[in-house]
Amino acid sequence: MPESVASSSAASESRQKKSTVSLASSAVSVAQLPGAVKRPMLPSIYPMLATPIDHPFDGPEWLFEIKWDGYRAVAFIENGKLRLTSRNQNDLSGRYPELKDLPKFVKGQSGILDGEVVALDEQGRPSFSLMQQRTGFRPGGRRMAPNADVPILYYAFDLLYLNGYDLRKVHLEDRKRTLASILVTGDSLRYSDHYEAQGIALFEMARQNGLEGIVAKKRDCSYQEHRSRDWLKIKIRHQLECVIGGYTEPEGSRAYFGSIVLGLYDKKGRLIHVGQAGSGFNQKSLTEIWELLNKLETKQSPFYGPVEALRKVHWVKPELVAEIEFAEWTHGASGSSGPKLRAPVFLGLRDDKSPKECLLEEASAEFPIPQQRRTEN
Image (cartoon, rainbow, N blue to C red):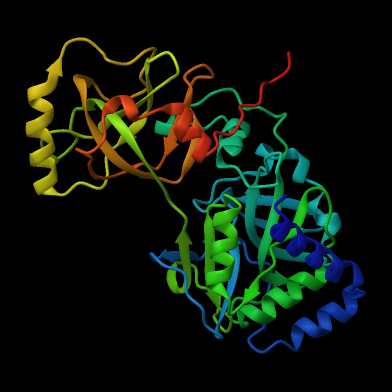
């Protein structure tokens, strides 16, 4: 794990191990929290969502956390049993059997945690690509066999209910303090710590360690079951140049094309498909790009190997270079299809760079491609 992230986790574990809060005293302290309401166990929670912004910032009224880049999951704990639900209210309990013992590491008879199911790479960094391998979900809604050999854990970052008390109206800082006091860190459970006021420094640390970004949360905010500006997410994005080798047919009311099909050259000079970019265009750029693509259309694919696309692809001569912003590398829908760009966005054309300069080796050196884990037979 990156040193600064590891030190944060170590501090969290130290606080949790020093906690001697009994179940009874915990119940008393929860009842005394301003905003706590006594009521039966809540049957469902719609997770609070963060509003995206472009730049990190500092502020004494904010807490800043690492954005874990996994699958959001609300954990319901009652009578020693765990129920996990997704943000769309799907039951995830059977998908992650190694989390079934999570209630043993929570000091409470009943509780509701908000957090993220995360797969960590060999450096201890959260990897969405590994999560895709674990679940079998791949870009474009395709499925593969899940790889149960990819270990996962649960990062808890909020506490919504504990021992008969609804905590959604309690200030975030008090909720997190209570959460840290009732968790016992283990192989499957971690407390997601926060940093006070210093968002820019945490963002730079996240960038240096190849993390997805950070989340800023108002320290006195309540838990709101919708998207709110009391939580803000700031993502770290990467940029590279890709060759345009085709375009997909448009969908709905969109004109000209749906997305541009992207590639990079390997060591043997073969154009390898790395994804499609369908966002980042406006009506003016759609028209301009279409006029260029139309002149370059050809019947032969310029790519080596398969191209994964949900709609029909029209090939073009590989003469245009696009500036692309993306979140990270992930893996394609088939094990042999090679790495793909996650969430690529078109920024513009680059007329100062030759397509032959767009090299997969250089791109993967600057932005490392995660290794695909194989399921052992």
